[in-house]
Length: 235
Image (tube, rainbow, N blue to C red; front, top):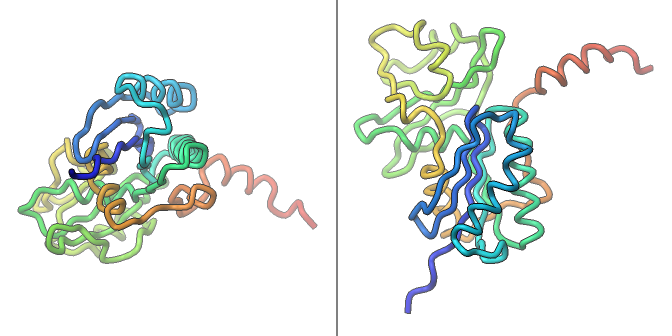
């Protein structure tokens, strides 16, 4: 008799519109949308409870919680990751943090072999990471960085397509010859997070609920303002 399929809770709060889902093995069962990340803290816990109840699952029936690690919304990521960590720690299930850009890259169509994933980093800068297809997997070919948009545009590989939520802001400044990913593939989805999470789960992998943190490259705007106000005040 084959082993039962893992029951998975999926939390995606890196994007402006958050999503929470349940899955059994590779099959998504239900997906709920959190329409505004400013409401995520209020809505996430009851949404998770509703989804579990809809499947007739007690919390301890969940085998793994998969969560998007970023980069993305500072507030959304903090709430989503803290919720996932707390759930995994209390329930005792596996925690699997998935890099958001890796999930987005994995949504790229089969006829594309290289892709740059972009997100807005404000101040005319972008979060950027390049990926290449290796067999059935997308692997990063360089670390995630923040750089000026014009610097990325000048240095980018000419054969790479472009995807990611940053296209909403930057697409009008791209040369016409650059291939753009379809709109519906530019944002992370529960399906791509589930696919990458199950691959790690099959390998026996997991993350430590006590040490997992959002993937940031710099403080939030509020933290930068606070640091600027207080720099030089300590003796």
